[in-house]
Image 1 (cartoon, rainbow, N blue to C red):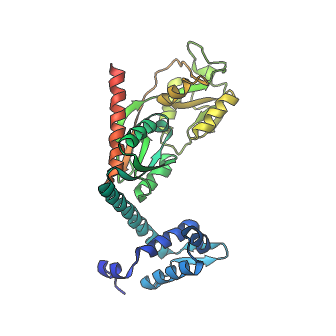
Image 2: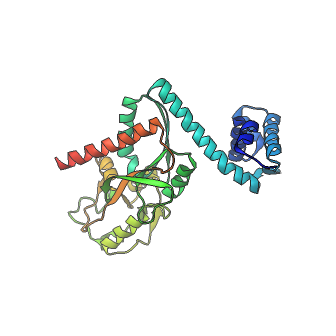
Image 3: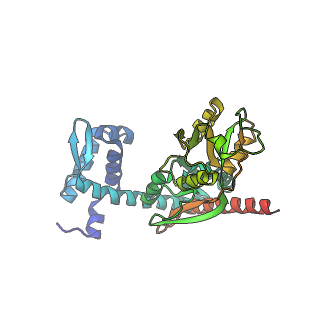
Length: 316
């Protein structure tokens, strides 16, 4: 049977698409029915109706739950786009009807989570108190695909070096270099200058290899003249990293603004390294072909305002 835009519009129900996505997410009809507060037969019936409309099976069923068929994978890709556009429509309608409202879903990296993002959110919520904010922390290899699918509105942090992923627009806000931090009780803390060979004696906490900070990490150790350390802990969880610094003699590699923020509390200190460190660009990333919601646009303006205020205070 041939399908057209109008024929699909007449037959498909948005609720069926929402139920289909929840079953995919949960991996079973029973789990999806619980999250949707529906009966299991009602969820099964909705999936069966969807399968009947396309004349194709969407799931293969087993004792462990359900998994997508090849056609189901195709439908899931389009369902994600539909859901993302519906959420954007809801946000725009809410913003139009109620003023500064809606929802922003943000993906963030360590380089933005300590200062840029909190200050921008404080500014956003001061001018738009009805905006709902969701924050997801991760590396770019996880966050960028979520951004393209429409599950995130913006990703903020250190921008990738080299080849840029297709379909994304990167907006640099300021430059920031990496620095080495350790507990205030660390043997190297307080030294006027720390040379590369001294650093090799200690374990290092560095971002995971899949992070887009990895290029800057390699440049950092090349500038030290010691190469990558042999004993490393790969982690992007800042709370875990800070606890490790306090409990051990490890040294962590973090963005300088993040380090300065936490060094003020006295628990950690920035090591004085005898080297010049090349900075990277911190900014935000949005989808090129998707219009940002009114709430997201407010947040992007807040990012730019915070970055501009930093530049002005630094120049003063």
